[in-house]
Length: 219
Image (cartoon, rainbow, N blue to C red):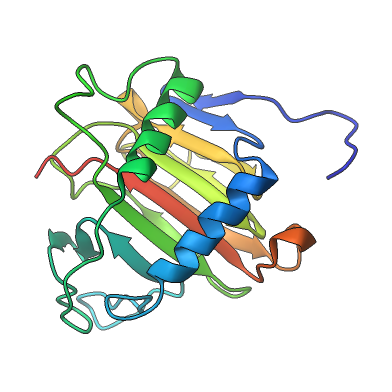
C-alpha cells in the first residue's frame, strides 16, 4: 500500500520466527520473478505434487538443487519427468544468508563456510490454491528456513512445533516480504489458508503468488 495508518515493521512472530516487510525492493522482485519463470519451464519444471495417499497439492512447485517429493529428496524429478533437478544458483544462497542476518541478526549457521543454502522450493499459488499445515522436516540440517513472497498477498499461518492446531498466528505476507524461522521455531507447523487474488503490485506483472523457500539440506 502507498499509505498506511500504521506502517509495517519487523515483527518477531515467535522466538526464532521473524517477519520483515518489504525486504525485496521492486527491482529485486522483478529480477526474482524473471528467474522463477525460467526455472518453471521444462524439463524439471513446474509440476503438480501428488501425495502418497493419492491427493494433489493445489499449489504447483518447482525445485532447485535437490528435488523434494513427499517426503524425501532426490537429484531427479522422480515424481515427474525424471529430468535432473535444476542447479541451485550461488547468488540465491547469498540472498538466503543475507536474509537470515537481516531477520535474526546472526549468521545462517555457526560456520557459513561449511554449510550453505542448497535447496529452493518455489510454489505457485493461483486464487484457489492453499497449503495445509505442515513442518519442513525432511532436511538433515536445522539451519533457518527463508521464505520470500512475490505477487498476491496471502494469509500465512505460523503455528508451533507440537500440533497443527492452535496456538498459531496469522501473518499477512505481501509481495517483497521476508519470513525467516529457525532455532526453536525451525520445526513449527505452518501453512497458507488463503490467497487474496488481485493484490499483486500491478507493475510486477504477476497474477497469483510465488513463494520461494530456501533451505539447507544437510545431505
